[in-house]
Image (cartoon, rainbow, N blue to C red; front, side, top):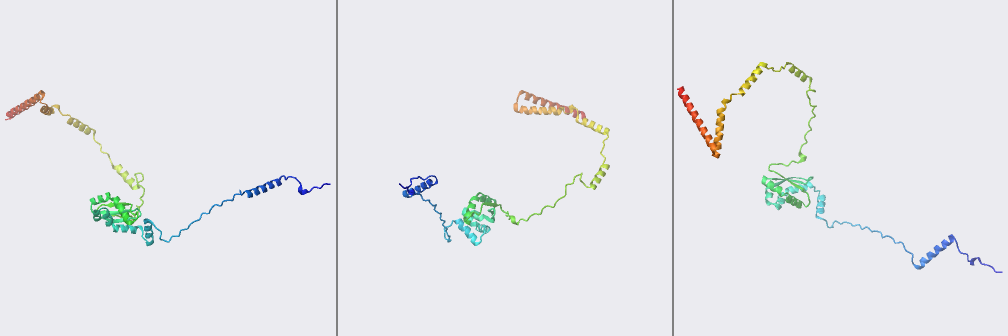
Length: 275
């Protein structure tokens, strides 16, 4: 009789057992072949902290700002330095301006430097050279303090806005009164004036006479103006003849001369009759 060993059974695994066997085989194969990949870790960024010892190189502007902060200097103080040393600043641009201009005030908020000239000619020269003067002032101060330069005429005074007293606000006034909103006394006075006022009336007969006199005065006889018209025409003809010298002009001169002779004879005869 033949016996069978269950451990030597040739039954194949199925289901979950088959999956577990496949996974185990795959891991073993990966370990044998050295194909297992290791997870790469990202390198950590190291932060380097620099400690300042106060001996690092600095820019000129940064060094000046640090010096002003350490010593308690302010922009107005620096502006005062510019005003005090204005002759040296102006001499670097134009020596004549150093003798004939003076720095009067400096507005730190607006960056405006006011200078006064001794004459209008030097004031004009300073205005024309405002750009180089501004650069020279900033170079002397070591920082861009001055933005604009205002040149004042002689005898002009720079007024500090902080020193200007605030003018009081005007007192409120009442509403504007008109004839309709006037007081009762005004209406009474107006009524009394209108009651006693009588317009001036002109008599119709007097008005007609005045108009008739005016018409007669403006309409004079035409023969009163005839000699003057003839004399004016003769003078115009004589003037024209002087320029042209044509036969008509000569004839006009002859007519004028004959009229003058006739007028002279007539006046002589009248004198004899009177005598």
